[in-house]
Image (cartoon, rainbow, N blue to C red):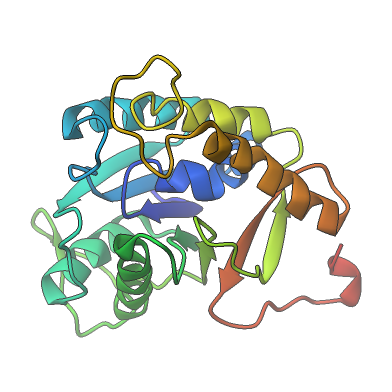
Length: 238
């Protein structure tokens, strides 16, 4: 299956939080979108790897993605090395996305920055013909995505571009809140974490609303880029 967009996150829920509105909008417009989680989030304070598996599956259904898979890297301890790069290269070559969305380049959680660099490097290496990978017994062809964009997470990084997600914030929030063990629940007996407060859940909406305000729409999601954004005409910019 060829994808238009492949969204990759270090943990289940990274993609929903960072670019869930963008994914929902692109799916609604007929694009094929897939999600890859690098780890099962097994070191998370709340919930378990098994509950995160179920939550990720449900969130993917809500967003309408064409596929979702987990590479099973070690939460907190995966590194940017050949073994991990090759695992991602195989996925890039298998699904041949035009665009890859991945973690923030710098963030509070160490896996976010690591995941960002790992995926970015893998996207470049995937285009090198002398790196051989196989999907089962078939040798894969090189493939390099046209664009790699990094969604914004905990830190309020200055975006290079913003996507209008007006009309899709409810779908994004539905997908985020599918992670019932992770986010605010007044009746939960689990330990509090930086993302389990009501303030954090509220921040998802008010941050999207504030970025939307800055570009003249209701809600938006921001991304940073690795190279200049090119347009045919100044009139392509909104």
